[in-house]
Length: 396
Image 1: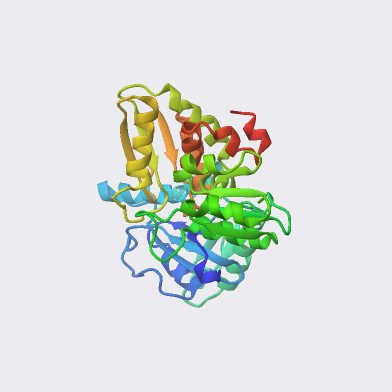
Image 2: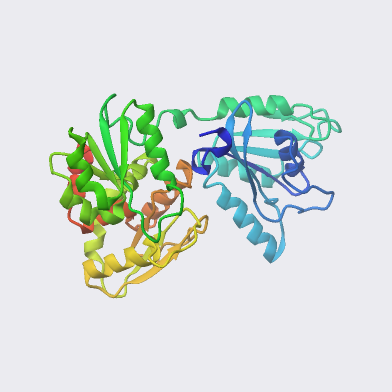
């Protein structure tokens, strides 16, 4: 996978914040050497967060986010400020752009407080330093117009980037070099034509990086493939939607899990998902369940989030449930109406945003689980599918 093909969830998210007319968009354009954002002398030119996936040396693949001025006014301005604050839930690094001629204002100090509250590493960039060479000692003088300080800003951002991206594994730590893993990929009406979905691609790559072999097969050929292999695979990884079929085919002495469960671990919320799945048993008539996806793919007629999961939940609980759905960045700001949140694996969301959603549910007192964990629970095989993680299996 080239840097240009790096999924958004694997990129370092860098947010640029500041008051109107501080020159945020000009600094963004100077840092990226592209006209990502429209700039003008009119206050509030940036009206919505603008995102751009790109390679930014020396950082590598990043997601640049230019935000509206957080001092915007009026009813529409308050909506823009709200969107700016929401961006904080997914940025790994923040750049606060301050007009060097003005210095930090109470609004800037409030934003710094939010960075600290959310444990976001940040740097203050004093823009327009050509007009006012003096600046406070806690930041870096830059000039978007002349390019002064821009390279140093990029160097500082590179050193602030967290290294955990290189340490996380999807499944490469679960197999030994030379071992075999079987990946079960059903091809139905909901499967994208001519390609594999992102978690499947990432899993294959992680197995190859571990020196293991990956055999990819449809659920309809799984039994035949296992018989023909001549050797027992170390692990079978399946799409959660066919757990019911696959669990009857794979012998119990072969470890079995799903792409969704592995992705929940990869994004850092599997333990929460395991504990949250038990809340399915407590659902009552009239309870509201949120099923949330991080991507905005085209819904098919038998879509997992809007059709299959609601059907499974109602069949398993025997309850008349109210099902709400959300997708992309549209996660609710209020979870109080819900008795349970069931989230996708989050492959299109970065780890920080998934952790925010997990914590927000926890702080709201709402159980939080994910697709694969919930399906395994309803199929009665959650403990088995967590066999690759013995400590978590003990929670079931």
